[in-house]
Length: 248
Image (cartoon, rainbow, N blue to C red; front, side, top):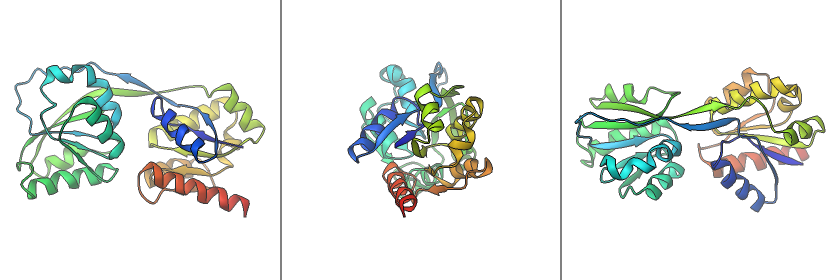
């Protein structure tokens, strides 16, 4: 029996390695494909900090960072995974939030109150093309000026890998891991297109957040579990709980 990981490449490889270390057989079905968007910032804006909600935003602009003059700025990362990508890209001052956009917003606001960031600073938000939350608007309401630059998009993958479809047909997959609302929707569309939607939704769906879980519940999944906190270790704990329940 296998665990299906729907996370996009290259992050899915690290997830698979961690799952195998825990004794699981893993299948990969990256249902979104990373596509960088050309970054052009021709303004003369003096930014006080950079905010990032995905490691993909860092990957998209990494080759340009030395020329953009951003590496000396503090960077607010949504979680540790994104923070690691920022450090690898050369950011020296990385402030890590609790794993979601709400905690990132709060971290920025607390930093201003703690004198680590000037109130009403101009922030550069390196973002994806599809935003699940208006982080710029929320920070704008708190007095910040937020410049949002789209640096990447995640395009849906229309088809599931053949070995994944065969495993669904043979009831060889015991749980699916979901990391974002968009990837959950893309997974459902691909499963529907391949004719394996019923099998796919009949097994535990382990989700990084309640927002992600809502997509699966609306689609009719009956076994939807949500990680206690929006990080991968908590998601793995949720997976183990789901598997124990199935065996009970």
